[in-house]
Length: 297
Image (cartoon, rainbow, N blue to C red):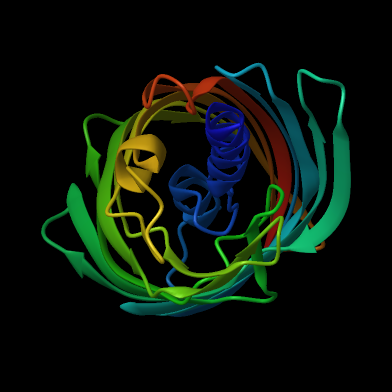
């Protein structure tokens, strides 16, 4: 009987921990970097940009669980050089299918993320931007019960990114950031309450961007390190089981055009990622396709 109870507890623990891998689109580093790049170079120190983006992401975990997130992300960017303010929001349909055939579906909103940045022009070829990020949750954490969209915790962080002009058509894009998430209450499938936090996230990005006439093409790599996850009451080895190291490779096509003297840009992105660790609960692959329409005025 004792061994059977331990077995049931182990199965429950594995099921709960598999739901700690919530995703967020507003915190997606490469989306933020790609959509914020200016459509055209203007002398006007003030500019507003509206971003409408649809996405579809498929994930296959090492445990055999399949997840799909499909939804919409909207952004508003206001530049008043050398400063800028950006607000991002999103919602998604969630679909999950486990290896035993159990399915889960839901529609949820992402966190609301605000970014305040300042640009520094070092010389004619090199500029950097320093930013402060602040995110707020939009709904309760149910992450120990089923997969969630949005981290659903207060998040704050620092970011540095920049652009280096290599030649007339080629730029090197790079960036790094650190995020900290404040603990919040969560529930498991048996309505047990926990104080839970994702902990910390560190992102790195590097890419090469080519632009010619109305076209643009960018290929890049991002890496993410999540660490410091914890709960109270404690879940045994939660950090070792949920902290992860992730790699992602992406390619982007961009096309800019004018409509009634208003700058527009269409962007199409395809990316492939995977988790180096943890081996049991990590993602075997993550495939993301998204398209956006940016309007600058």
